Length: 157
Figure 1 (cartoon, helix red, strand yellow):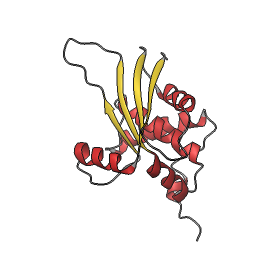
Figure 2 (cartoon, helix red, strand yellow):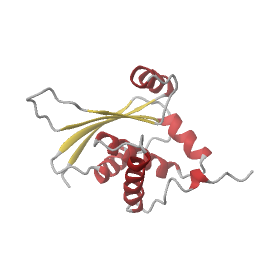
Figure 3 (cartoon, helix red, strand yellow):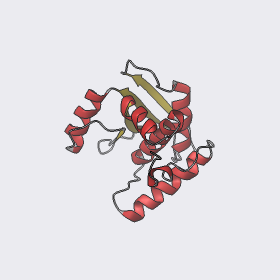
Figure 4 (cartoon, helix red, strand yellow):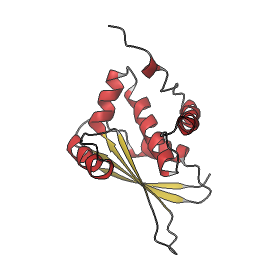
């Protein structure tokens, strides 16, 4: 695997955002490319996430992570993977609701977004299985358990 440069932008003023070094580690782990590349990871609040999700996906609500792969104009080769926009309040809320460690959920969101930048998706079941298996494998390297197991069980009430 080649080196991945992470440009970090924190536009969120709250707590709970992992450090730049952690984000770099998680993004590098998920980078499958043979060539060096660069990604921008922007941490945002709910209004910015909602505006971007509405503009680009037609969904008028904030979301955990948005991936914007870089599409170079014909004839131009620039080593850019694209941009990840991660909504800190949504990630923190999901971690609490799903009974997951905050750091583990952040790692999952970075890895999930990085795989999207590299063309993985989960629209079709077969594609979802491939993407989820890779996420599980990468998270295991960080000693983080399968993030999909706890989502399938109802929380104790």
